[in-house]
Structure formats: C-alpha cells, structure tokens
Image (cartoon, rainbow, N blue to C red; front, side, top):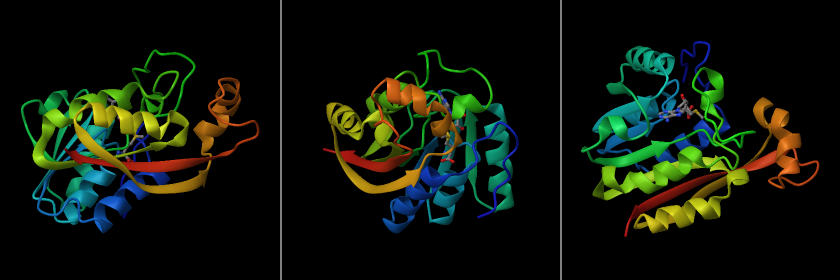
Length: 217
Ligand SMILES: C[S@@+](CC[C@H](N)C(=O)[O-])C[C@H]1O[C@@H](n2cnc3c(N)ncnc32)[C@H](O)[C@@H]1O
C-alpha cells in the first residue's frame, strides 16, 4: 500500500507490517469500531478500514501525522476520523471494538519525552515503556465489553511487563506473534546505550518484535 509520508512522520516499518498482518489475518477489525492510537502516516487506520471496520478513528500528537493520515485516508478512499491529541484523551467516553497501537517504544537517554519531530515517534523514556504503560492502564476504559487491543513493541522493553500491565487492567493478554528483525537506524544508534543498561546483550544487533493481544476477562 502506498502511503504519503512527509518529513517528521513515521514511515511504516516492520512493526507496522506485523501488527497489520495480525489484525487482518485474525479478522480483528471486521465490523468493529477501530481506534488507532499514534497513527503516524495512518497505515494501520487505512488497513483497518480496508479490512472491513465499521468505523475507524485515528489519534496522533503530531499535526503532520494527523495531516498525513487524513491525506492517506482520502487517497485510499478509506473513511477515517483523525484527532490530534494525547493517546486516549481525544476519545474519552467513547468505546471501540478494537484498539491498535504501535507506540514509541525505544529506550532513550532520559525520561523527558521529545516534544517535536521524528524523535517523538520512538523515544519512550529510559525503559521504553512511557507510552506503553499508559496505554495498557487506560485502554480498558475505551473498549466495548467484547473489545480487543493489539499492541506491537520490541523485546527490549519487556513483553512480560506488557502482559502484566494488561492483566492488572483486567484484561486477558497473550502473545500473538513474534519476529526477529535486524536493528533499524535508531536502534543501531542506541546500541551502546542499550548495552550499557543491560537491555541487550553485547554485540546484539537484532531484536524480537512482539504483538500482544488482550480481551476483557
Ligand atoms: C512508532 S510510530 C507508529 C506510527 C504508525 N502507527 C505505524 O505503525 O506506522 C508512533 C506514533 O505515535 C505518535 N505519538 C507519540 N506520542 C504520542 C502521544 N502521547 N499521543 C498520541 N500519539 C503519540 C508519534 O507521533 C508517532 O506517529
């Protein structure tokens, strides 16, 4: 699928493709109201619309991403409502049958989250969990009783913590897919920091990506 990706907007990568694949193969979006949190270029939102979603809503903090998603939805004749805002805040009070998210998850040097541009696509605090933990804690509030959430992230930010966080939120989580991929440019540039923190083994230059799914208990 061709998507416009202006400077500063996350270009769909292996993580995007993995989550799209799980969503489409599992029929998760079919006839559901779908929410894509941190939509970037709108890749997951457009894929959900094409996979038969009843409606698609997309959220991103970045104005450029909101604009790109709006354009890409038009380009693919997909009906997607796009909101600018922080994670689940723009949809507070609404409920969705499926929430998908490929949030920023790369461990960063500090716990200060970037306010502008590309780094906002991946920096997620010292352990990479700043956004993931907030999504896990809040997602049940925007799910219908039979709703599901699908998240993708790297092993580097510990899938067991995601399973535990979703469990604490009252959901039943499981790992739905795993794939080992070579480090991209951001992970390569952070390798020394990740080694020093013990988040990767010395010399490790590939990571396992994990798709976690969860439903209401
Ligand atoms: C890794 S990119 C994923 C983009 C897209 N979903 C994909 O899979 O290709 C993460 C996205 O989350 C957005 N983001 C970062 N912090 C956010 C926040 N607090 N609320 C909403 N979106 C946020 C970034 O702007 C970026 O577009």
